[in-house]
Image (cartoon, rainbow, N blue to C red; front, side, top):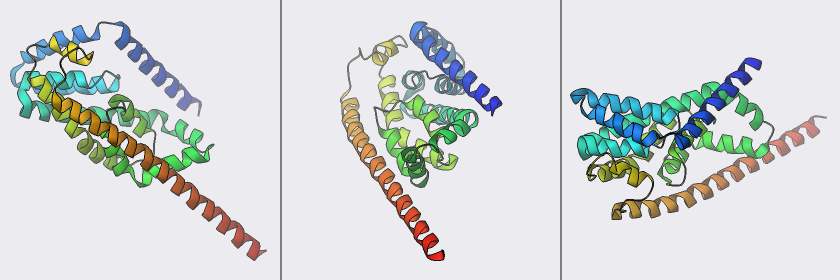
Length: 245
């Protein structure tokens, strides 16, 4: 147990340091220069950008940055393939880090609360639907969801399929916007919300807000259903015990 707590503490400190570094250090200019180097790699460029994507997901760097770069460097079709590959692989890496380093700790905490236990069970039973809808929400941070799902009981294969299906629309949209940029330095304006907003982005955002409401309602109903089922099971067990005595 002490080893598990040590791993969790180190893991939490590394993530916190990475998040602070992303806020304080000039990460975006560094990434811009890195993308310029990737552009000069020829056929190895997509492979290198996928690697950058994985690192970005693990260290909580916004996934929109390499996605814009994918569109600008490789066009809509090839850029979408690169973004999907990098985004899904990065999501899987963060999922497994969260599961290996913090799932046991989270499970012990969950057992102390009936509501958290019910939420964990609901995500487990309806994992594919929950993952897909969560990925479609523009409010839920992509890089944080990767770790969050690793802390739940949702199976890896449901997570993988749900992530692949759920992130595809946003990935293609960001790649499409990136393909229309004039240079890598323009990425900063879109990341900070200073660039012109394409109509497709507005449409996707409002659809995403509707999906967010649906996810909230769905999870609430699923948790209530699990709690009612557990309550009936406990009443049945008490009734059986009374009859036996």
